[in-house]
Length: 54
Image (cartoon, rainbow, N blue to C red; front, top):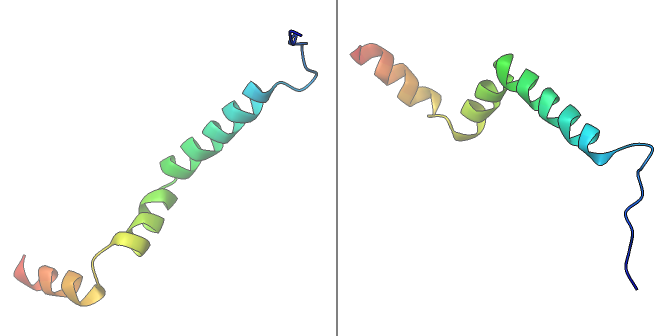
C-alpha cells in the first residue's frame, strides 16, 4: 500500500524556519559566544595572565 502525502495545516518547514531564526538571533546577540566561552573558554587565571603579557 502506498502512503500519499497530504498537505498539512501546519507545515513542519515553518517550525524549522522559526528555529533557525531564533538561533540566528541568539548568535547575532552575542549570547552564543558568551555561552561558548563559559563552557569551553580559558580559565580566568589564564585570561588574567595573558592580559599581563599583552
